[in-house]
Length: 149
Image (tube, rainbow, N blue to C red; front, side, top):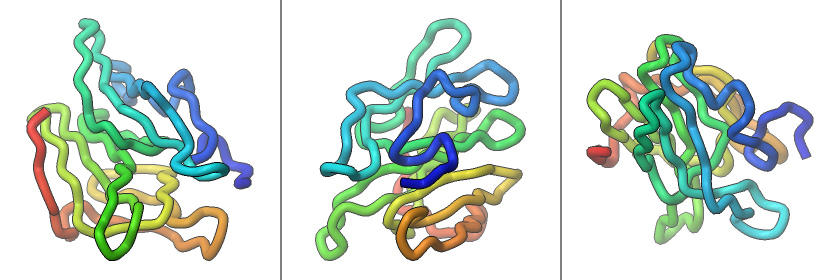
């Protein structure tokens, strides 16, 4: 297991990283389960707003998320089944101004976000085995789909 908390195997939405920098939004998960025994967690993910409005992001989100420093964008790992690759993760970006979820085409094994600054997401892919540093520019990567929330 990896030592850094929160991580894809161990996170709790009561952690301060689940609240936006402007304190207007909070990420909440429900029905969290392991993908397989000993595997990272997956669950339904929602954004709660200060007016108690709750918007569902996706049914298969991992964690932990990363807020962009302005508090208007959120990066969230999304679990997806791909025909030739099996169960993989993709990066989802929630834009709170437009209330859209952009899911990017590139796939990963297990995402562990550490920060989100302007257009760059920093973290790791496969944080336990064959760890790769992640630097993902949302302006330059291909978008697979856009979902209105």
